[in-house]
Length: 250
Image 1: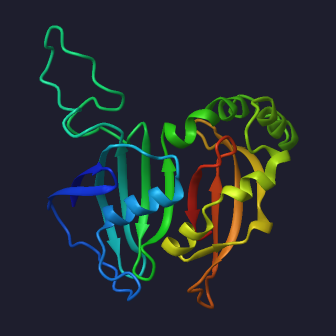
Image 2 (image 1 turned 120 degrees about the vertical axis):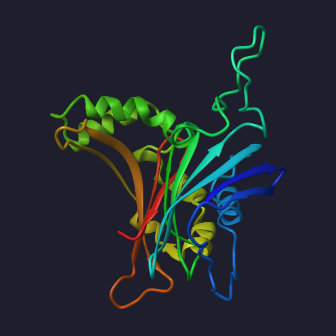
Image 3 (image 1 turned 180 degrees about the vertical axis):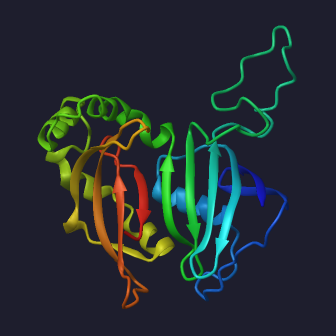
């Protein structure tokens, strides 16, 4: 399934090209059948209050698993419809807007790329965000941590402090005041427990891949539809603007 959609003042106009596979629809009576891009748009508007753009949502379906939901990659392209379509090297043509260099992106959106597992009980089961919208301000600290494998956890946190984040270790309460608890609970069924919030910095390396390093707040929670075998969930947030990075069941 390849979907191209245009966001205009909160309404979503969708153009669909059906390539393969069925569309997974929720049958939960609280949601009814839903469109995955509409759900994504509503969740983004609830989770990121400052994300007010006109642009494109592009969905690439990766697979559907019975009982687990559908894993999808969704790109948010911050440009108007058609602004990414350029007719070659035309003399005097204006430069393309940021992130709008083709009809479709050749890879994940540099602005905001999402990996979402949609499910049957709640619209979203797992969520991960990448791109400059959520990562740009923390990239410097992440690189510094990656470059110093000898650093302790304390030294990594000190590097974060030097970058003057809005929600560093001294401003935990400020972060907790802006967590979109209701949106996360309503869309994923994950009820976060604010008292569990912890700030951590990490670095690990698996050859031949480059080091993976970063820093984030992590808040644990429990699923509202918890089964006896699995009831744990968690969410992570970057420390500069407090933007949501991930929601997962581990």
